[in-house]
Length: 348
Image 1 (tube, rainbow, N blue to C red):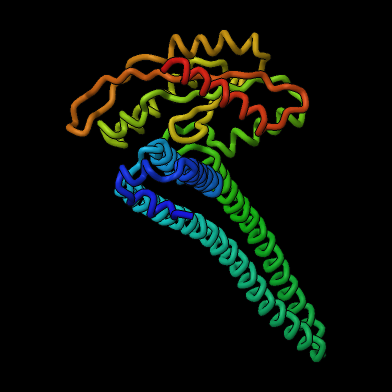
Image 2: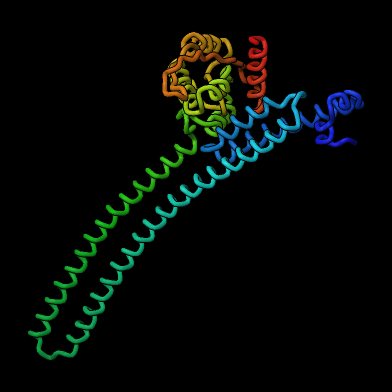
């Protein structure tokens, strides 16, 4: 069988003379390659959501360029781009995980110092009590009762002083430990929030949305899901740069969140896709989606590569479905995705 590379390197007239099944082989190989690119992007976003959304977006963009008319030169350029994207994702993931490791180390150091201070306190008072014990043993050898009495009063006073000081130290230690625990809890909550938030838009990320959908399924709640895919977002990135694209995503996310009810959840699904989970059936969800079309779609102002303000018109395709009894999260998302692509195709 002719290899894919040899086939692509053939002269066009020679390629036309090759058996038709080779065209079918090329189409199958390209389809597998496209599926692989999307799988890498999706799993990269799941493995490290904080830095994975760009990988998914960029690999999706590369995947869309793979058509049956692709040339050998374009395939080589595509291979280099994929390597660069994976390298950048790996570097960002490594930096992100190192930062989290440093946070954990800092917390452990605080706990170690606290334990050390407790040990030092106990050792200090152990020396005091050792001296007190020695003094009491000395009293046993005295024959002068007046001196014995005076020494006992002195040692009892010292003992009371040590006990009072230990009590005070314990109270101070409890206050200190409460402060450390509060600081520890605050840091953990901050890290948890970062892990569940999209860094560009501030919306719940894919992992957070999936967890909340699973909770609704587990508690047999009625809800609908809408997938929103922005139209022409790649052209904004290509023409005005990624910072401008991020600005558009952020503005679009803010308008989307403010246009819906407090009970509805809005998240970034990945790339230029958003997801909305509505706590109602399909008949209740449709008016909310129409509200999105009316108030969220339209003109936005971004900064172009030249620093000048540019107006862009943001539109999107929306697929909304109601979750059916017994349906898994994967199945309801797939139906919403299919409805979105159907609308996108019809609008073209």
